[in-house]
Length: 283
Image (cartoon, rainbow, N blue to C red):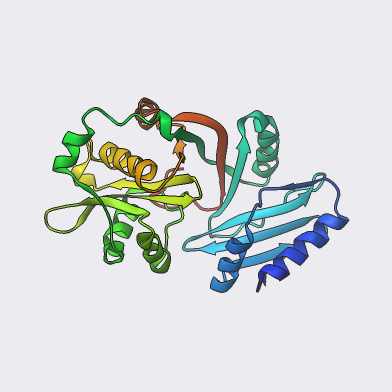
């Protein structure tokens, strides 16, 4: 594989491929800044044939595949020990086209791993739970600090599927704290018992990484943190809309979000996986 050293190199390769190619199919929608970060970290690689560009992003324990290919080309997928993930994001109205693409990759050894729906809520439609104020007396929600990184990472790694969710490194976490994006509940002993993150992009915020300590589950803490974080985004940060991805199988959580005013916005995220099944990760 060839390591990609710069955004310019990446951009030139893609432009040349599109120029000589036929109808192009792709799951790759990198922003320039995303490519720059990957090349700085040395995690972006390329495998190329006449009909396909496969860009691999190397992560701890897995690789993510982002491709460009001619429509009549057979998807190229080399089988190795490291799990490989394919991410697709489509609007619901184009689900038929998504299914066609998924089938093409399934024929190369990939299988359906996760499927998510995106939910959204406008500030005017947000409905906090009736008991939120009472719950916050027991579990006050606050902006967390860079020094909470180890607690938060431990929570995320114990609660989340790290193959579906990219976790921030220390540098990114510190920047997020400076922006007020990391919120949580601090326990009496100083540890973090629950955490989530809201990424602010103009008037829109994207919420992710909601996690609650296993010892504190079943007490409404996750709902309290979620509601307080979203409320702060609307009232303190000038956000007009909040959205997030939710596993379509998690009907309990979807019901809670719907009662808060969230609706399905028509976006679908599908993840495929190839190669060895990783211990502790749902197949």
